Amino acid sequence: MYSYFKGEVTNIFATHIVFEVNQIGYIIRVPNPYQFELNKPLTTIYLHYHIREDAHELFGFLTHQERDMFESLINVKGLGPKGALAILASSTPLEIVDALNKHNTKFFNQFPGIGPKLSQQIILDLQGKINFEEDSKNPKINEKIENISIALKSLGYNNQEIKVATKDLNITDETSLSDAVKEALKRLKKN
Image 1 (cartoon, rainbow, N blue to C red):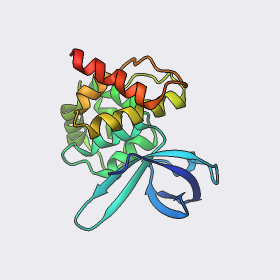
Image 2: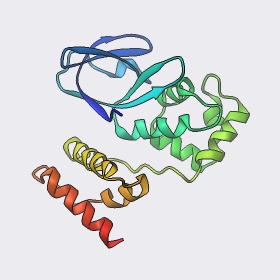
Image 3: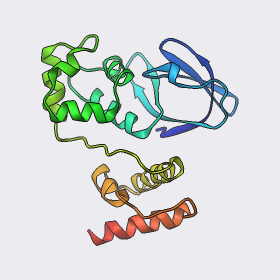
């Protein structure tokens, strides 16, 4: 439902932040609230909207890779949003992928509420299914690729097709979004 917000952090609490967008303050649960800066204009926060019977919650992340990792983690049987946030609070998506690839259960055991059985389940469910490369591109390019992904998703393409279409896409700061989407669509037609 939401991909990201642009606004500013107006309050920081131990488990969440208040993020203001167009004079509306949203409570957003984040892995580490203290990594955000107060009153910095036009901060981008990537979102996951989580719906349960008893609650509707927004979870926020500094990068779309963190958000994607969070979404992968909460799909593991027995691991909820609280456990996924704990993992992301003190590790990066690349460290998590490395632990998955090395079958490192001790890495996951260090987080609260995650025992040996759940560590095995995380590895079983996610090993080999997630791959994040270092982002060497600048933030404007990353944002453009995020917008291309949103456009492709709205056209009905799945995550795997979107990944193929956007991987190493040759765009610059000056490339318009419509031209970038056209280029991604050309790639999809070739495959």
